[in-house]
Image 1 (cartoon, rainbow, N blue to C red):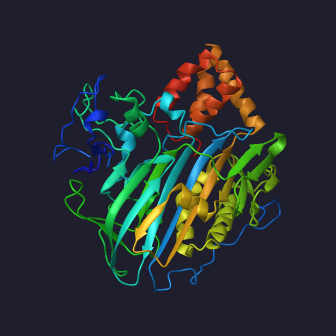
Image 2: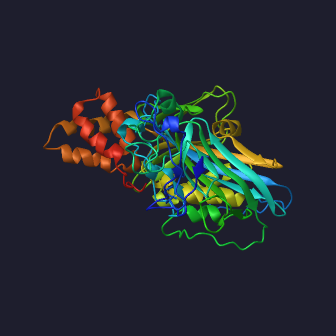
Length: 483
């Protein structure tokens, strides 16, 4: 059903596919599809440091937390990001990208038009899970990843198949460019059944097929991703076996190599902890699962200082953690805060069963966004069973051990933050100050849309907010506020 591209990007990669004739129809469903051209372009291929306390020491080495040299082992880490109102409601509009990915990454977002009407259905952004493979000798393994309540938006290396599919040009009457029915609100489906099948952000699938897990001492040609431009290369700084993917029809002239399998996605589903906020920094985190939640961190990050509280005991099944976001009065400078928090998060990740270099790679990949972006947020480790249910992973042969770690990031809109956003949104009605009001939201980077949506909802959805919302929802929101 899916043909991979001969080149990864136009500017970013664009996915190719053909669909059955019934779903590529006119109003009477009578149109037929054509095969993909062989040369078609591709998807756009503890307590925090307090005043007077000493900062945490540098992260110690943990040589015992490493691949033991025997067995077939698979490890994975990643994160989901959400924005919640003070009442715990998940805010939509999280499709905006935080930072660019290297040009070799496959990117289906470039083939769709995820405008404001569609982005209302996206309240979870799954970010940068990477899957590592360890084996004492080279072997082959079949790998497939599913996402029942979302779709995969980016990945690398190439896959043999993905779902939902993307239409190639001229396979649908009147559609002359690549079109993504899952991300295109006005896609001309030939029937309601096809719209329900292909036009929803659900039932995502990536099938890498059979990949080569190479020898541990192999020297492989990795695609360029310099750290001064991309955080991508942090994830490579581990002792995992190198991987090779070859033989994907139409996808590549030469095999692709990487240290891991990478993917991202968008979804619409509830998370295992319901976080609410009260005045004065009050935070309540209710575990809605039937099993315990891992370590919880509560952060308060300012422009030049930050503070955090860590709760290694997590949250018991059905329990509620009541905490207060630490004050920034007298908080340590930002660099000192980041160092201490990074050490604490690495300790928590080490305890999950990840190897130490994997824990360090995860923190190095995300610490700029997690630790330096101003705001109040909660980070917590989801149970592995929840991860397995959310993004089922199939590997054949079955590994001797699998460790999957998802750290969930909750951006908390406190009553004070909501009041400031509501005040700015209200000023949109006054042309004399509307420009300053718009800049309040533009400066929020990729969180501009969910925060504006929340403010307008609290105001009763006034019409004067619609132009700014349409612009922000449809635009490629620039990184801002150190995001």
